[in-house]
Image (cartoon, rainbow, N blue to C red; front, side, top):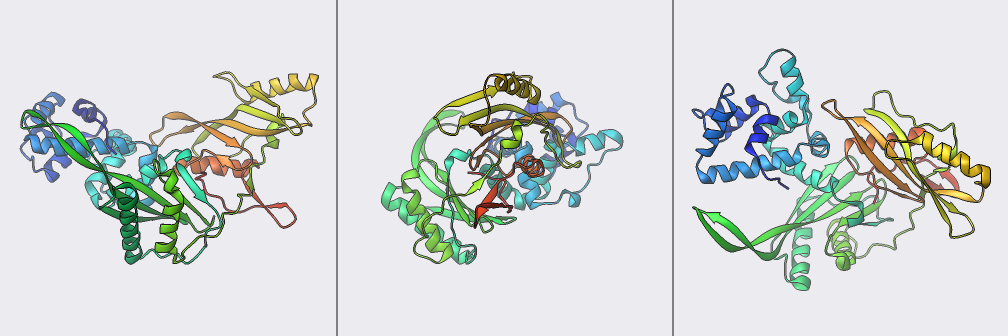
Length: 407
């Protein structure tokens, strides 16, 4: 995961102290303007252009990855692995130091410089958090215990995946598996050798073309609380059951998983119809406001749907006015709320305000992921009474822990 680097943009967004530390300690440019925080931006650009080509290539790759991680998702992945209280403070005084220390860019760049050992795992977690829900394949009714996370199990998983892909798809001869724990979830990242592709590159001032074998990823997500296994296998959907069996044999010690139970968790969206309904969230949350942006009603007996959608700058009040007008002509009793879209405004780590739209579809689908703000929104759903429940016994809902990641 990397982005194209613009050195001008990088010097503008990232603190001069950290830029100087990076070039001074990592690449030994102690006499260069890049390693002097007092140097002008133009002087740094001139020094940048004077770097050896192989050094500049390496720096462009690394700083491009830093830029890609400098958002809420990347920071949340880092915070999963690391407490920032242990990081050394930036050597500045006054409000400027405080302001820089609070930016996402500063926190991410400091981690890259000072805690390089956890960086690859943070990049992997951010990669998993950014995967769209439609690319995950999920199975319920997975054993809640018995998972083997030893190095031997990871080696067995690596060998089986490599051999399987080499046999069925003529790729994957080389494979590696990395395990990362996050709360009750355990991720297994399998990076395997993909087909060779031609890559045009500049080498010593000459444009050349050579075959390159890049790595592709499979991700296995085991959740002992949900008793589920989710697999990211984009491009390999036809091989999903085989990959599932490989994981079961390698890490669960069983030859075959039992049939997947139907997911009985349900969202209760009925409260959204009430004119008195309002979302509730903890006072410590960074959520600023939450509004209903869209409601879809489905007739209980007929295949008929009605959609109420607020204008771009509207919200719950507009939806309630539409519902009120509709109820003057027809009763809502034959309808249930089958889908809702919630617009949430929240404060980022650096104090700016952003918005996020969350889609919830009955009975059990939601596009929340594992990012910190998604966990806050899930907590809001719990406190507002629309969090998923699971039916047990006589059908009475029973509150249980549910993952913020819904596939």
